[in-house]
Picture (cartoon, one colour):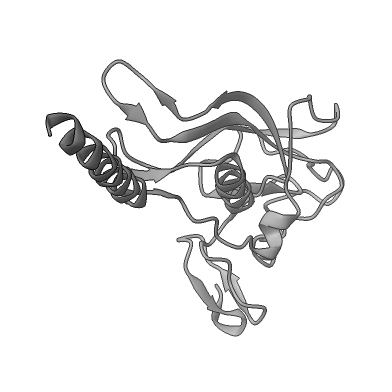
Length: 193
């Protein structure tokens, strides 16, 4: 009789364990990948150096996914790459050289669900800044005889170098009939200072 009850208990135990595992798996999602903006679609992410004439815009880093337990959303390379392209586009970059990739992993303390990408952002020579419409510089800003091509010193975060002038980058990008003011606010093109 004892042997018979052990046989009927085992399938019940397997079903119970299976249901528990399914419930646990349901708590562990994958971070959603958002559609790319038109500007971000133009950003190249590669593991090689950019062309020699590219302008460095500084380091860049993103994290896709979250959580350091059994719950939370797991990041993916696709999601991290999309975030990296969006951030690069916001900064006026169109090329990112990857320098470090950290995939989700199980550590001693928890399950790290983040997918991290680190790199260096660049603006390729001869490519227009697609983030915001250009603002006409004051006549005294750039001498007509010697037009500048690089910004010295480099532009602060939130600004991109365009023809030697640090121009503000609005986030989100301004509409076609708007311009980005120096305080990074979109205004109608007719009321810009």
